[in-house]
Image (cartoon, rainbow, N blue to C red; front, side, top):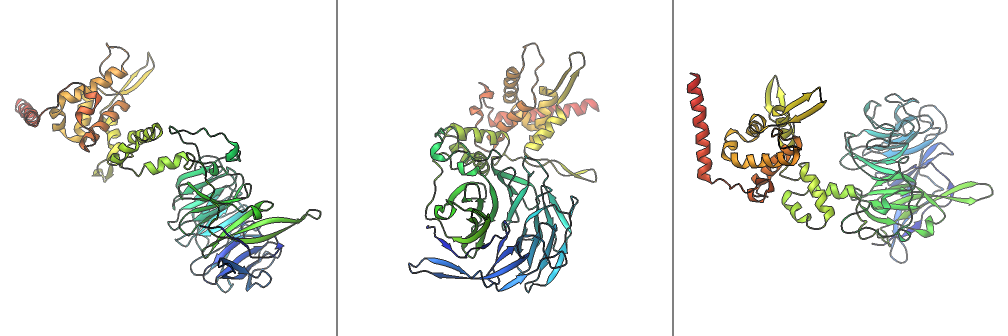
Amino acid sequence: MELKVTLICGHSRLPSRRGICWNPLTRCLLVCDIDKSCVHAYAVSFGRDDTGKMKMLLNHNNPVGTIGSHGSGPGQFNYPVAAAVNLRGEVAVADGKSSRVQIFSGSGELEHSFGRPGSARGEFKGISDVKFTPRGHLAIVDSGNHRIQAVSATGNVVQVIGQHGWKLGQFVNPCALTVNGKGEYFVCDEGNKRIQRLSDRGRPLLEWGSRRGPIPEPEMTPFLATNDERQPVIYSVFDAPCDVETGLHGEIIVCDAGRRELLVFSDVGICLHVVSAPQIFQTNSPTAIAICSNMLVTMTKIKLDDQTGDNNNYMLAAFPPEKRVRVGRFETMPVHCAVDIACYLTYSDALYVRLVSRYFHQICRHLRNQWKLFPLTPGHSTITKYNRVVSPATGLIAVEEAFQKWGLRIYKPSNRIRKHVMDFHGGFCRALSTLYGSIFCYQYEDLLLAFFRFFTSSTSESSHEKEEIDRAAFIEIVTQIEEVHAEVRTWEQSVTSGEVPLPKSLQQIENAQQHQLKKLLQKFVTL
């Protein structure tokens, strides 16, 4: 994998910040020209130089087509900031000053126009980027309102994502976004200096980056990571992220104007490599990126005349990198990425991962307690229709519902004590009967009593108190029972079982028959 940077365009006036887009149908590069308030289409050709390496050629003096002109009327622009192309060849152009989006046909004729200044649904304040989604909608970065709006081709608002803030799912002046093949959004949250990944329905999934801004270079930072902990990847901390693009294989490419680098991440935020071109980025800042065929094109900003202050630009094409910048032995993966990857492990896989280090042991232990290691699953709540149970609760939610149903709520106004606990016969056995059937409690009555008393002694402060367990203890007991049923643990391996012998199969049958006889005797007494 080698990196080759080729100058493909001479100096010209600086276009808009993210105003480049590749049209695969016409094999043209669309460039938004803010001086002439239009969008130029430049024919691009690929070839090889004398050394056999690929190069990209573009004649910036002769555009093959132009869309729009200066003005506020239909088909005109005041400040074109971004363009996008769908599978039909239609071109959507976002106007930052007019706060509207116009859609043109492949021949340049205006088809739709929508948007106006404001903060309501369908209104915009400082549009900074636009992209087509796999469903044919337009994802518009409403930077001034700190949100993303998904709009149909006719202007109907499909969904509004985000608000002002620093939490996951919130934005501060988002500047760009990209959409992968699944319809997931990757938003460049410029104000928070991070990348956020959201589902196609707008649900926040994860983030990487930091609001702290730049940090020292790797060689200037003391290496403190050990096998017991992992620090966030150093190249996940951005300086001035300004654009984001999806690569050919689903990787996420981030343009950082502050670092003057192009950083390539996986879709879960793992830094794969860094496109570093010192001969280009040493005095110039990359401002926009686009994937043209199989090549990465970036637009950089250069000041030619310091006295006049004129800003000019040139474009360059970056091939697969010749220099892969490594980010350290223990700094290759952010913490949240390790947790997300561990969620795909099964319980049996986690048994081996927990032996690697204390760090992985803590992660797997946390996922186990949250029932995120198969066969332990979070499950779903009870589904009822017309006052009838259609689907009972499953997983961890079923355990919590059982505790809510059979637990005791104790309130003593004199001492201001509020507790939600569970006793053995009135609550614990009935809750387990709800989960595993009534016969289960009688088959393992002595063993379950040892479980119950173990957590009673560990949670109660005085021996004179009534034997009760809280919610956390009940969930832990049920978790260990599920582990035994999944054959990843035996009864003897449970510390809570004490020295109580495991009942044999014949004894389990006798206990179940004795329970059934008691129920028959109770019915005879009532008759």
